[in-house]
Length: 100
Image (cartoon, rainbow, N blue to C red):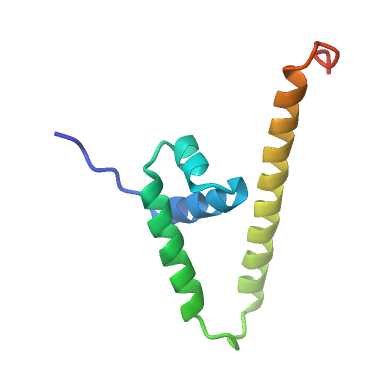
């Protein structure tokens, strides 16, 4: 009997953001070891939820700070991914950069 995996909302949001950062649902799904169809569904639900919020809603200071921190986290994760790729490229080179 296969046990069904349950994902919390924080994981789903992280998976959706990762799929945008990676630029590919398949790549994010492979990294998280989940079905790409799940991330696709989560992306659709995420877009739908974003559209249901009124455009003229004023945010509290705490909500603004949360959004700012989430944006900074996404940027830091993207920079981390870029640096990981750069290290991978240099480590596969001719050995000139292996002592960094």
